[in-house]
Length: 413
Image (cartoon, rainbow, N blue to C red; front, side, top):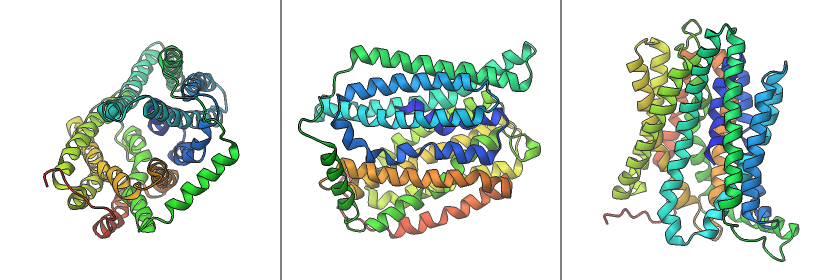
């Protein structure tokens, strides 16, 4: 589940930066292609009408792998940017469909006890995908680049060659997983008997109508959007800022350094922050900790403003700053996730409403990401990251005021 999402959302930005695409174009298009993860709830009811859940899991894994192979070949075309964006858009649809089906297999085949038992492993492997993709693959691309350059290739040709190998590696990995799951994965249940397209549409209308009649729902939608407003602007620009040369206001890091600091140490700090936040909330309760979580989530984005203004050459300062930000990101993000689970989702359509809330959250990040490249080009990195800090202010205000519909009882009471 993790690899297609992380590659399209984060790794592709470094790929296009290496190939000379502008920040504005990168941020806009790599954000826009993420829309299937935002609206996947719209077609999720229809996956239960046709074939088995295993069919969709295996098919989408094979399809995504083949498409990454096509993207690798497309890098050698004159219009590579338009072609690869189109291919990645189809990968996004395939990946979002895969997530629905994989979650369906998980819930259909495992008992309630086993679902709780293995949910930690599911989260761990999703974070492992971040480490493998933003850490391992980006580092590997940098290592290949140095090898191709040493053999006499131009900078552009070395970048094309290195990313071709990386995308082909993704192709082989996903196809191999698809073939393995063709043999090993349980069916996840057959298609629902007697259900038609009309039934699917009727059920979808009911789910949407019930969502918008929930108590405090418009307050909750505003909270979901504003909590991650600053992050939405930062997400696409940070790897581009790290990669940009110092004359352009960036830090001039190599792909290997980005992979190590941002992808490996950063992903590790994110995981530690997430785990510690879970224990922190369990002891004190979400209502008492939500504002603190919001502060820990948003304030560390100021690290990038400091890096942009002072442009330190010390890798300890750069790497340490990234680790601090990622730790805060992991720690604070748990607050929003639990709020959606405990305050927005409860009710008759709990799973669908959680998916709906997640879609709204992803939509807000997608839209701000689309605009972030144009804004950073207009303002420069220094001013942009200061503006991001101003964009976090509404999050503090709404978090302090947001009402709770359901009782919040920490474990120690």
